[in-house]
Image (cartoon, rainbow, N blue to C red; front, side):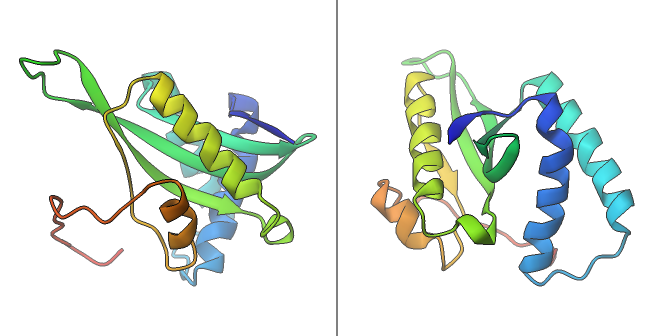
Amino acid sequence: MNFCRATADDFPQLAALRWDFRAEGGETPTVSQSEFCTACLAFLHQAAEAGTWTFWVAKDGADIVAHVFVCQIPLVPRPCRLADRMGYLTNFYTVPARRNQGVGKQLLETVCSWARTEDFELLLVSPSDESLSLYQRFGFVAADDFRQARLRDF
């Protein structure tokens, strides 16, 4: 198993897996899978080129079996640190056949290690009920200092 940053060659698989992930979650598509994958590919290429997102994958040979996306958010300079950033983790998905085998754990371990090496201030995530215990094992806790204002449902 290889845990690494995705490359542009991985983007078609990532787009297809994003479709699977959202379909598994019960979303009803409003576009065709082809239209979605085209839009998703454009996003992945633009985000990678801009450097605002880092896409992490677990690969078994050429097959991506898990992934997580990290949005890098620059923080406003402070007198104690002129440059800083945090990361928002999203789109964490493991294909059904590879669940409960430690793949997600190893992928999250890789991402957390990378974020520490890159000196991120913190990582944020909005976990599902199913993934909450995984994040808790990595030190993610409920934060009382963040609030959300939902402006629309999906």
